[in-house]
Image (cartoon, rainbow, N blue to C red):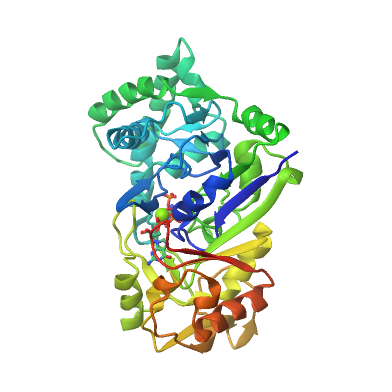
Length: 421
Ligand code: GDP
Ligand code: IMO
Ligand code: MG
């Protein structure tokens, strides 16, 4: 029986998961998203084209694969329809390739309004969410009042919807949040009808049957480990389990059916939204990472905060995820840097620690190790042997510190700009 390989982000999201899922898909027959929703923006580039996927798995472009939106995902019919119709317009017919778990929860128009209302109520303590209704939808799921994709098939769906809407409106009133959702609601119902043309499935059976038939499955995560609701920099996190265990609950796969765990990280760090970021750079080096790395959100267009690679956080993520192989992204962004720094420990109140602390709110001084820059264009390399010695020193240091091999190195956004060792 085959196992499910999992690919997930080890930082604060936007590590390059979409690109790598696309690169790995030819080796798999099934690709399944296990959590998150349209807060994700997964970018893929090939043949001079660029696509950003939100809810649809990044295996969709390799053709002939089964792509599954798993039960752990929260789905907004309106945004899903936009995404699917955009792909159809560019010649990618999804119907034969895409199926959706009946147990995935639906994001309603009032969930988006609640997201905005809660953020406004938090004032300067706001999380800086993507505004897609993620938190309120997962809240309803956990409080057992959510609406699932399978409910769309219920003859009394309108009544189910109206009950949830009335509940949400009462909360919105209590927060003094006024908004007119009638236009969005009309589009939502049309999009909900559109959704029904896809195969609505019990994804846990689909995936376990695939494994039993020796078909290989790749599970695609969204966000990153440091945004996990349990292990991330709480409360500045998303509302799902982004860690490897999320693939079990988000797809219906038993823990002993997990195979390789691919952990993706950038050769530096970025973060969008509020919350602590110990190695953040507020100087021209941070600006250089942002402009050279095009570090602007794929979903919201917001500037991404940039900083040095943080090994304390990376080792923590590797531990909670059980990472077996590392994938390093975007090293090419630092091609011209004279020196490169990596945090190997934190100093908190004069005490040195290599543990990711309970709260990263207070003052943390990262302890840095400095590396000589490689000062050449990594994008030309086709094999590990072709990399300059300074770059190999950087990679091998990370491997030694983490105890996990770096198996894939991405040196540009295109599918082809990938070095596999
Ligand atoms: P995801 O959310 O993890 O899929 O990542 P995003 O798509 O939000 O952000 C990654 C960005 O980096 C995208 O614009 C990619 O096209 C780009 N990218 C991915 N890998 C590389 C790389 O190795 N080098 C460079 N320069 N850009 C990359
Ligand atoms: P991908 O899959 C980066 C961040 C938001 C905010 C916090 C909570 O593309 O890596 P939410 O809307 O989820 O309630 O926002 O999480 N965030 C992301 N940051 N990449 C993402 O997804 C993100 N999804 C959510 O900016 O700080
Ligand atoms: Mg992204």
